[in-house]
Image 1 (cartoon, rainbow, N blue to C red):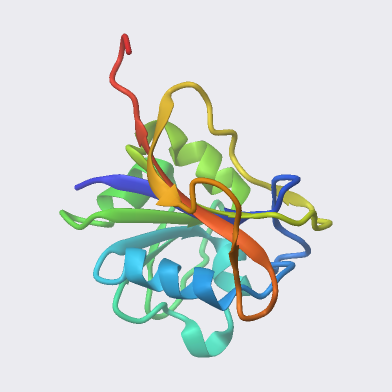
Image 2 (cartoon, helix red, strand yellow; image 1 turned 135 degrees about the horizontal axis):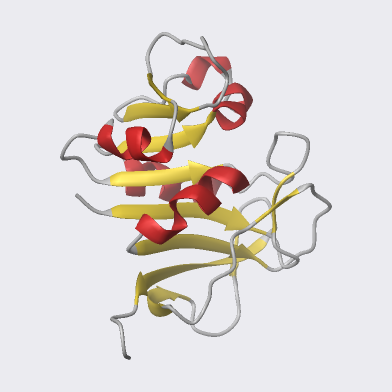
Length: 168
């Protein structure tokens, strides 16, 4: 089992605004689906609530919802009350942590991989991306310079990061 964090962020580090994505980037949604299909996705309750109802639970994935709200239950997902329970809810499947910001923070130390879509533009928002610190090494992505252009006109690039070995 491996744990990866997956998100899209604007140039100013925003990942959400008012419980929604402040942009529409179909290419990122397709990448998200490809990266998470067949795995377990771990999300906070607010992220679950922000998903369009027709996509809850996310199809083709085991859905685990991390919440502190006592008694909260939902059909179609495993409910976890702690980060440890959320990881255990995946069984032997790979895990994609999909947000929000507090769930990223809670599971950051467990992650071996980051799958990030970087947008070139600045967006207003109230939820920020985790910092990609020195413990991470970029392993792939593209383009290396410049930007891809979405069919919606947004400029973006993808990056995959792996946790660096200790002492490197």
